[in-house]
Amino acid sequence: MNYISTRGDQTERRFCEILLEGLAPDGGLYLPVAYPRIDAATLARWRGLSYPDLAFEILSRYIDDIPADDLRALTRKTYTADVFGTEAIVPLKPLEPGLCLESLSNGPTLAFKDMAMQLLGHLFEYELGRRGEQLNILGATSGDTGSAAEYAMRGKAGVRVFMLSPHGRMSPFQQAQMFSLQDENIHNLAVEGVFDDCQDIVKAVSNDLAFKRAYRIGTVNSINWARLLAQVVYYFAGYFQATTSNDEQVSFTVPSGNFGNVCAGHVARMMGLPVKHLVVATNENNVLEEFFRTGTYRVRGSSETWETSSPSMDISKASNFERFVFDLLGRDGARTKSLFGDALRCEGVFTVSPEEFARIQGYGFQSGRSTHTDRLQTIRATYEGQGVLIDTHTADGVKVARELCEDGVPMIVLETALPAKFETTIAEALGPDVHAPRPAALADLESRPKRFHVVPADTAVVQQYVRDHVPL
Ligand SMILES: *Cc1c(COP(=O)(O)O)cnc(C)c1O
Image (cartoon, rainbow, N blue to C red; front, side):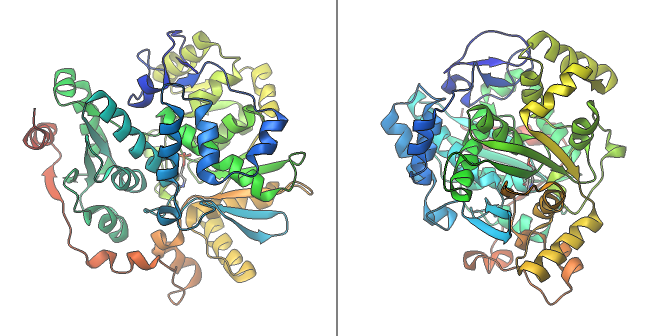
């Protein structure tokens, strides 16, 4: 399987060439030249597989430059009960007739990003080892992504992580989660500024090409194809658990921000998984909900980007969305480039044609929106009605799923985080006496020794820190 860019560059690349990359050279995102179709016999065989072996089967349709035995060893090393809590890895939790949660948040950082990032850690170590190279990952985080990356890369040979976070602005839990890591290859830089300052520094360092090359700087952002590919697996695993035969259909509701998670659902559906609807659930930052309702994609400025109680969905633009639009436009790279490269940059908005908009139905997409009040109400109703405590992001999904559920089609809501990460909003919804259970291994998290380094919001200082910690 080879990969091309969404913006018209037809140069075909192999999986391991794009594994460590972000954007394609023409500014587009990578996609496979075609989605492999899974026939009925294969789907029937997959139903009986363990999660790591299912992951191997799916990944091997997209990766032909890692020997099969090595790839199988990587998926078996990644998806263990030890790391994800159960043999099922992503067990379903029934909520009410026709509606269940798929647990994607039982990895080390209690959010679904571990599902992909843990695999990425093993893939990076493997590929860097094969090449005899090193990689220094530079990232900015306000919470989930940074901690998932650190827990995936800790102790991995050939990889260092330099993670910038806004000093004093993460929740005590998130801060403790990252700063308590004592691994030598993990560097937490607490920047005296806000998240945007952190992101600006990462951009400035990445634009310093000489520095980037000399210090082998890379990233692990959500546009990485391998991350998206790893997520395709749990759509199949959720489907097999929710049905007894491959003649049945299910729908998924996905709490969405950057469109990475639900884009993996789109890929699974294109492969032939019997998915009726893919429901995109957003919070008040409804860039995506607006597109699926109107056909207009309008990125937001910072004055229009709200800080909500489902913070990992607070986005001003959805960085993976271009992948779906490329498919929607019949894989017309020139037209995708004109929308994302030119129209967005100049005007911050584009509208697809009525014919293109009409095609969205064929891809199964629906959407809905949820607000802070909806979240509180949904958390309360789900706790009192079903005895299940859900987090704020999952609550956005459950709220929208309840509106769009159909008789006879099981609806699977992806649980993207555990409530233990968002105690303040849980208390607001349920009062101070209800406590979100925390995995026993994290009981003393906040009291562990912390390892971090405070720096001013200054690119030169961050670059000097990297120089001091990377042997040339
Ligand atoms: C990242 C994240 C999301 C959004 O996922 P996207 O792939 O960006 O759409 C939703 N919920 C939680 C808890 C997250 O960490």
